[in-house]
Image (cartoon, rainbow, N blue to C red; front, side, top):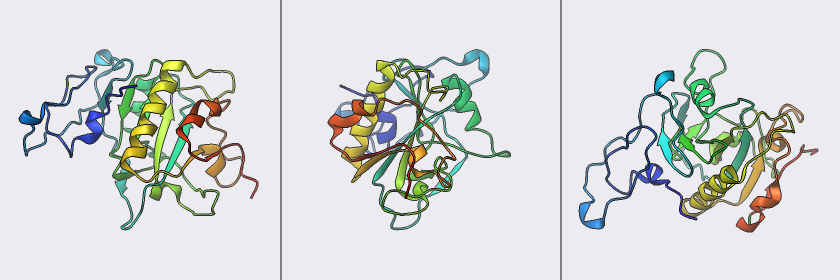
Length: 220
């Protein structure tokens, strides 16, 4: 699977940001330049919104983020579901700064469209009060948050294009960071039962990635 995650790799290559809803291509080696244009675009007006499309990505920066703690090692993937019906509305929520400001690194639509919200080298605000299976608190410090557009009611499904995009992002994160586990938001949330997402997610779909997975409610 080839995933167009080139926007996340902007620090490594030089390219012009795409028009909204268009895919990007990495330039040939001879065209790489020292200056890297900012790939982020503003939140489009409602009338201009268009989902990027299967395995295509746009970067719409959320203000709800900050720098990771010095020395933090990114080693965890947190899978969420949005409980919001669309990619556009989720991205809009991640622009809000006054009431319960939240964000994720990536949000994936049902058709496999991807919006990046925060640089993977920064800390997104997705996990809340949390700890992992080893008892480490503040999971935001050392994780990548990935939201899946889903109503989180246990009935709404996760289509194959969405799962393929998720697998592609996790594979890319494994290449970039020493990822050692995949967890559900439900598992890490404190107190137990505070979150249930991603409800009814098909965890076996991620088994081929060869990483320990922790999901369901953490009883410890």
